[in-house]
Image 1 (tube, rainbow, N blue to C red):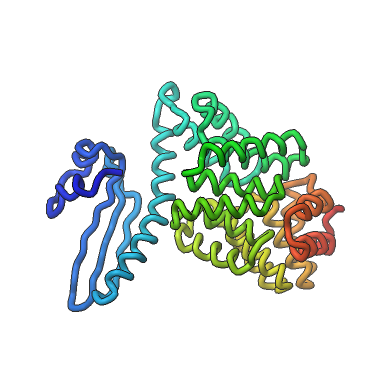
Image 2: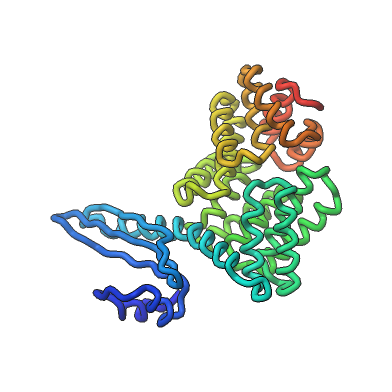
Length: 355
């Protein structure tokens, strides 16, 4: 990010974005304009990749002049929240364009990210290889440690609950906390592993609080924070975080976490039909993640909709033929609220899934 005074040199001009990028030494440029009509104001903004001139994002914001400071705050939150995933996608594409011999730890981390979108072990394997290369180049690189921790957690939960993988995942998660104290995304990612495998809600929620104090518009922090509180913490916080995450980054690959969190809140309230509807949104957001079908099948069965539950259960077994209720129930009972565990385990049994 360049200094404000440097960018002000272009005020009132229409320079070539590629030239601006070269002169300021930046890869991305955020530009915009302000127009007034009576007591109304319209602010437009767009994010441009300096090297190629490609437009990554654009939007407009309208408001009244007398509320200009409130409008300013809303725009700041919206722009920061929306730009972060846009930049991440652009950086991933930039890393893909680079020659393999020129890749650094950051580029390898970026190349690994897309392999985590399905949250299924078979897809994550390639990402883990890239992260291992990144950590060879930079053994203290917190984002790579956090993502490796999450990768191992996926392998534990959907690959046989291997204790060695769980220990290694927690080692990476704790290393991410040590070296990533100022990295919101690394803290947020590590937090989920601290809850799922370390069963430490205090540490997990503390890491989320730290992440959001560093960046109050970090969608990743809100997505993982929603899930942590949905499983084990304050349902009101879970709902707030889930909705804020979806507003900040509605098309984020992590969006299914918000729906999973909201569904768990509804299970805690025994509002099973609503839980089923929310879990259906989660499935739509990530149709390759088998656990989401388990959640939807359980909620449908608890709502008495057994035929629908069995159809969803069939899809679950297509994605995860070795699925069994007991290992999942044991896993959940170590950190989730009893009413959540009850909703999942009893519902899955009613849906006819194997014990």
